[in-house]
Length: 601
Image 1 (cartoon, rainbow, N blue to C red):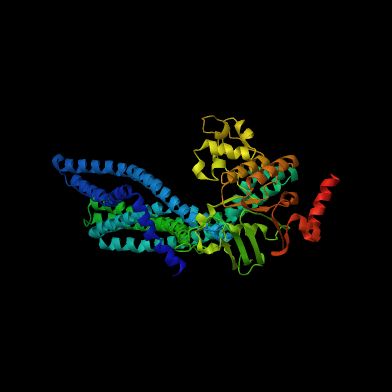
Image 2 (cartoon, rainbow, N blue to C red):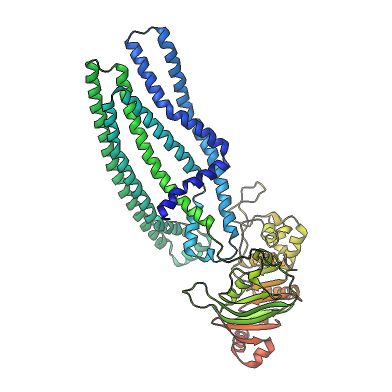
């Protein structure tokens, strides 16, 4: 199926979603739309009858019912837009909430990281995030489209009753408007697609100039004007393209309006001449003027709606693609129950790369992580250490080889159940704009209302005293973006890098009883004294537990039961700290170099 056909077919699921989430509101809108579609021709024809009756000398008894009816219809005409706006807004809210919920349910269903490390998918996701209002907008626009068509056809029918010749001229005159608006709609969509990368780039510069993390380097290196100039050049290019489109629309619309005025003027002259010959009444002329204007407005509105719907359908297409995207990593239909770890984890001839056209990150890695033992991973940046962590958490599957958990291939386990048995602190840990208690409780949501567990984890991570002295203690918002929930006007509190890392450790400590504990650079960002103290705490925490440790500070790994040295994705050495030093290989050289550096200080 071509993309354009798939996009048009997106109207049915969009309308289905909208009516499912807001049936009452959209049902009422449908009724209001139908009434609103028939009002113009009803008012126009009734006005004709009133004028003809007045010119014919009809008495007050004959005119009064028509006048009252016109007044009621006028009141209804004035009221319907307000009702339409109210029910449209409520439908938008309901459908938008449901669409956003469905989108992020789909996002959460992706079991691994491949989708989130794919730039093309992330671009599609960004567009899909803008589609939460599309289902309601498409449905409402379709109703308005139907209303315009009914209005145009009914007014055209009224014209045809008076004079088929003029009705035919009006119909033919509408064709250039139809063709021109369709061409403009295609040009608008093409311009939007073409400018999308530039608009994202402009937004990138805009966010960078106001980003807290970037502000230090921007001011230190004096790059603010450089980035602003780039943003303004990009914005100027966007505006130039938009200006060219607006200029074309100005010429086309002006030409169409002039053409419509000529047609209407010519028709009016003919109608007046016909009235002079007694072929038309004064009411007929009034109906002619209102009907021609109404048809032209309805046709123009229809074209604008088609352009709007085309754009919304393209956005909604990205939404449906994300919702229908298959899992990037296969999950067993009937997964094996994840057993408690009692024997260990085995990486058996594991090969891995992030894409078929990308180099190997791991090459034939075979190693056993014994139950109850601590295994340290050593290697320079890019050696494959963090990739092993991702594979252990089953964020990816090995390209070749396998990883077993007590003899069971990880592919046979439910990733979510496996991860419940793993505690971790990642090198690129998160700092959440939430309260201190929530930042810790995210490590195990069952502790969200358990202040004792949260406090115990914070104490283990040596962050309890810091949190306790915050303005609202554990209820303090750790953010520059949001204020505390106590009603104060002040912003939240921002911690230092080392304090954020201790909070991340506290999250891991909530899962101290996990089968596998992964600590990826847990001491980074800490001063030497704090590092030494925390090292003792971590050692006590993982005593008797199966753990994987990654650190460039090799002193942190010296008491590991097994140290694995990686180079270019392959294992080059394994052993204990003592045996590797005695071997005089890569580990010994790295450790000696680091030790010499500390001694020289």
